[in-house]
Length: 220
Image (tube, rainbow, N blue to C red; front, side, top):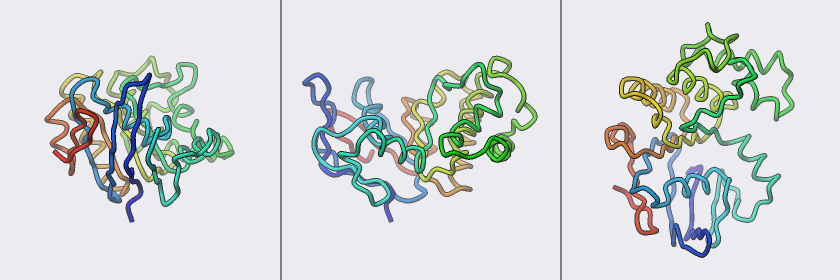
């Protein structure tokens, strides 16, 4: 079963067509790089998939449910249930410990603090940072903060992980380690991984590569 598909999707912003007649599906457990020139619509595509935007035309089907015209509450519930997000800027809350940053998505499900912290600890162990659980984000390096962001994205056991330039703020060595971690977690946990990247070497690490250009999305 394909957990995600777009059917003849169009997305316009301010009267300008960014994506036009895009039809594509993603396989279960697949890793996929989304590439293309700056401004081509890579992040727009990821925002549609992540239910942060809605198509102007066409259909978006996620886990068998048509989410094209879902309201804000329906989209928020589905994001929390099925999707995980990793951003270039980490987006950690500075006033929460590392442990509580990772546990935060579970609070939106009504899970108690003790249970959420136990689940967060397990994810921090997977990214090699359990020993830093009581630290603050400011105490960590960029690579460590990105590992925390990955742990937070995975704490809800998402079926699809969306990563938008996850290595953009990292040095080359740290970036390679982060991509290796994402690939390992994709393999071990069976989640679909979609990653926007401008780096050809990073894209080559994925099983599939898509090119966004001139409003279309093509297998590269």
